[in-house]
Length: 94
Image 1: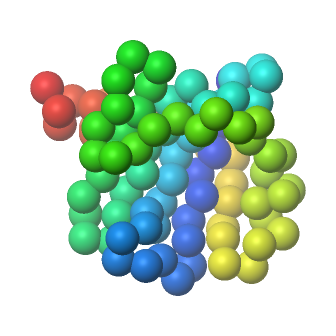
Image 2: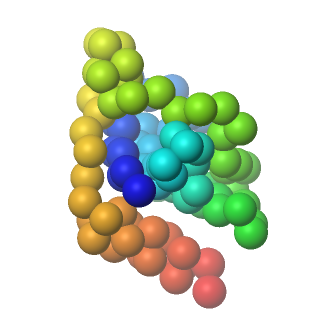
């Protein structure tokens, strides 16, 4: 698995400012969290989705492609960091 954190430098009110993605070996999203400027969020996995967030059906590009966009800051994060964010938002729903 690969874990990405993508920050939009100039987000719109109705677009996420932070996106966390878990990417499998085929470069498909297996879990995703989107956080909006007003603090609202969406979360998705193959079993469910919340807040308008859904997993992409597309192959996710390598991090270098995200980094080429000057409006984005992208970084790989650890599985532990992703799990911490996932649990924070997933447990909020429980």
